Each structure stands twice: as C-alpha cells, then as structure tokens.
Image (cartoon, rainbow, N blue to C red; front, side, top):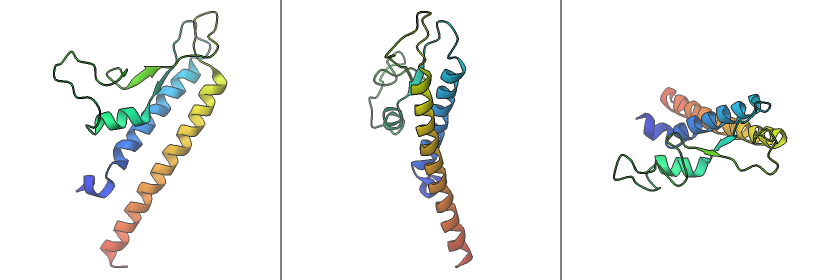
Length: 124
C-alpha cells in the first residue's frame, strides 16, 4: 500500500539523502591527500533501481553503466591538486546546495501527499 501512496518518491528521497552523504564526505576530506571525490548520478541510479537500466545476468556483471555496487562514481576534477586530492571545494558546495534543495522539495511533496491522505481519511 505504501508503494501506491508514495510511488517512486520514497526511493528518490533515499537516493537524494545518500547523494548528500557522499557530497558531505567529499567536503570533509577536501584537505586529505589522495582523496578521490565521488558523486551519485541520480537519474542513472534511479532508472537502474527501477529496472529501466541494464540488467545483470551474472553475479560478476557490472551493476550499471559506470556505477559501482553502491551507485557512486568518481568525479573528474577540473583542477586536480598536486597531492592527488580531486575535491574542488566550490564545486562540491554548489552540488551539496543543489542536492539539499532537491531533497527538501521531494520531502515537501511527500508531506503534501501524506496530508492529503490524512484529510481524505478524516472525510474533509
């Protein structure tokens, strides 16, 4: 029943939360030598989770196009640091801000759906 109530938005919210975790890890490790920045491609991972992407027929097949087992991909830096760190602070902060706005929008949408169903159950 909850799948019909929330649809794809529950999975999208979890995926957006994971992307924010990955981006915050990048920001936290901006000064760590050799740290490689990662990101989560929302559209690719969501289509892969819903079965619209590639299907693996064997356990050793890749999980999706360029994706690791958990959906993370390494970002390609514009200006890599001399110490091998690929985190670019301004870019990561911008990505995190965008991800936070998208997360809040999805959360607001879900909250609106729950409120609508509550009102329907009360007969309002």
